[in-house]
Structures are given as C-alpha cells and as structure tokens.
Image 1 (cartoon, one colour):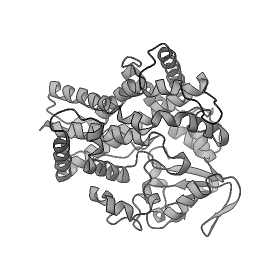
Image 2 (cartoon, helix red, strand yellow):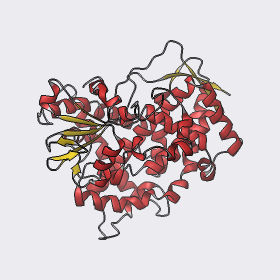
Image 3 (cartoon, rainbow, N blue to C red):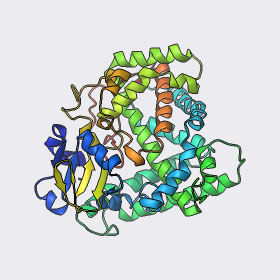
Image 4 (cartoon, rainbow, N blue to C red):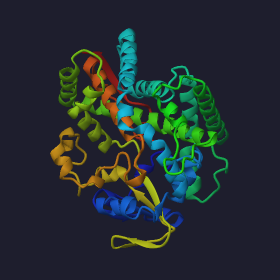
Length: 432
C-alpha cells in the first residue's frame, strides 16, 4: 500500500466486471472492485444519490484537502458549490486561455534550446514546471503569484504523507496518529493553504476584466440561491484546483511523451498534424480544436496511465450492484486502472494504439469503459481545461522537438494522489 497500491488490485479486475479484495486485507476493509461499465454507470449516474465518497479515501484525502471544498463535500454542500463554480469553466472561457497554454509551452521550448541538453532529461520535472506556469497565468492571473519552486516543494512534502494516511484509514486509526513525515506534511499543507489565501487577497485588488479562473471564481455565485463562497470555501477550492489540476495534467503529459518516444510513428503523426493545422505560428483555440489525432494520443495515454487510478464510493445502505449484494460498510472502488486494461473491454489492452479513439470506435464503446476524468454528476469540472491545455502543450512541444527513449531506462510506478513514476521519466530531447 505504501509503495504501489495498484499491486493490491485482484487479477479478476482485469478480466471480470465485479471482484473483491481477498485475504487478510478484506478483514480490515471489505472492498469491491467494479470494472463493468454497466455497473459503474449504475453507481455513478443512475443511483448517484445512494453512493457517496467512501470513508476510507475521504479520510485519507482529508489530510491534504479541505473537507469544506467541492472535492470532498457531499449533498447540498457539494451541489451549490458545483453550480457556483461551473460557469468559470465554460468552454468559451477556456478557449480564450489557449494562447496562455501555448506561451507556457514556448517557455519550456526556449529553455531546452538554451540548455541544449546532451543527455536525458526528466520529462516529469519539465511538465510540472510547465503546468504550474499555466496555473499562475491562466488560473491565478499573475505570473508572480507563487514562488514556483517553493510551492512545488511544499506540494511534494504534503502529498508524501498520503500513502501513510491511507494505511491509517485502512487500519481505522485516526488521521492525527503520527507517521514518518507527519509533522512536515501537515506544516506543508498549512503553508500551501496560506499561499492560496494570499493569492485570493492579491487578486481582489487586481483589475476586474481579466478572464483568469480565479477572477471568475471571485464573482461566482449559485444561480439558484445567489450564495457566494466565503474566503474559506474559496481558499479550499482554489487549492484543490491547483494542487490536483496541475499534478494530473503534468503526469498525463509526461506519460504521453514517454509513450510517443516509444512509438515514433505516432509522434510523427502528431508533429505533422500540428504543422498542417498551424504551420510555424503559435496555435489558437480553433487550431487546438482541430488537433484530432493529438487528442486521440492523449486519450490513449490516459487509458494506459490514467492520472487518477480509482474512484471510491460507499453505499448509504445495504444494497445490490447488479446481482451482487454489497454492504454499506464496503468500500466500492471504480478501478479505473484495471477498467482501462480489462480484457473484456479492450483488444490488446496493454498495447498503445491512439486509433482506438477514432470517432467511430468511441461511438461503438460503452461510455463508462473509459473514465480518465471520472463520470456522472461529479465528473472532473476541469476536464475541458485539461484537454485543451494538454493538446496545446503537446502539439507545440512535439512540433519543435523529437522525444526518444533513454537507453536502459525503465520506469517504476509509485502512485500517490496521481499515477507517478518513482524517479521521473528520462527521455532524450532533440530539436527537430
């Protein structure tokens, strides 16, 4: 559980649609794994009100995220926040941010051109820097709102406590039970929340005509009740958007570049598409919408390496899922990792094939066979932001650089809040 919790997934979750945790672990936490699209749709959509976030993952996640925010709240508290925040993520607002995404990719391109790397680089560090730049410009509206390296160090320290918090929740111990790195992690989370408070205060005094996400959040209100978020709710939601948003996108881009380094033919197709759509100029929103194959590459990358590997639920009362009886005490895991690699749903499930996301093949597939952003009412609110960001950055980088495998490098998974490699991803980066 501490090193790679994916190894706890039962083999049946890769071949069947319903499986359970067995052995000693099941005594501590009875767990159901769902990898059947019909059953998943039942839990996330058709009976969404019956299934809330499970106590295990909520307890662990509350060590790094505020329970008052939209991510961990439930019922009416969640609904009004979702309604209030949703307008900030309207598609037309996000399209206007594409030039910022491209600008941040260009900064990374210039850094590589200046440094002329002669050996392999850690692509996860580069993508993390790029996505945090996007956060500063497109979300906070101020490139100086955060001290980037200090912020990233604090995030790393804070998130390092999550696996231990999962163990505590698994053993039904309180979250304040000390573990290695406990006090450093708690201090880091407090410092991050304080930084969010400072960013909100600074943004209140900035010009009101900016279209950054924080500016839109400050004016957000529930269209049904008129309720606005207080500073604590704003701070919690902004922190969650930044912490989870930049991390998931950085990891998805990193795994995508690693896969393209192993598949030069697909990389060439991305490069050719980017050049045919925009030539040598910076891309705009319309250009990014036209990047059909680039989008397929990202979808396929997130199938094999979904940034978020599980979605946890728990029934409010004893019930059935399909023909299976499920206790209200059981943890229900929509096992995205094994769903995306399930032999019942995917031909050659371990192979990298972007064409499996052609429009015709997508239409023929159950929509809940693929869940990189979750599904149902609680589907990731930043999904369109992330897809536009990733398409713009990936196409911009690949148009100017070729990514190749680093000899002798083999990644090892070390999932935390997202699906991370243990020591980064080494790639050779060469100008085209």
